[in-house]
Length: 98
Image 1: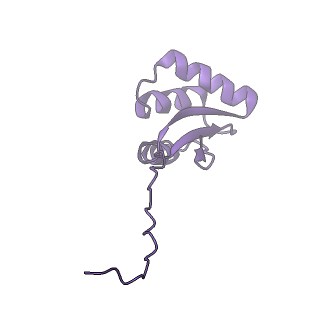
Image 2: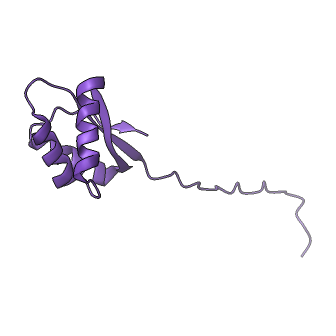
Image 3: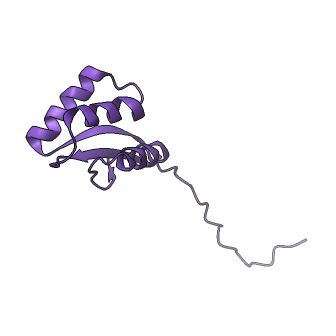
């Protein structure tokens, strides 16, 4: 068969780049009604790997600086921990992207 002389344009190839799974930060805000002990208890209860000493340091940071990032990681976990801490009465900032 002879070529018809019609040229076809090459088909563009889409390269799909994976976006990294969003990581979010959980920020607890200072308030006038939660005690240090309550904040520490909640952080230790709900945040994986959080020990009492680290929780006390974060509670002091919240008190002295007005807020502290208490955890950061994958979105689904961040949403769960944020909801749990909020349900315990902690004053929470909206979740933030890292």
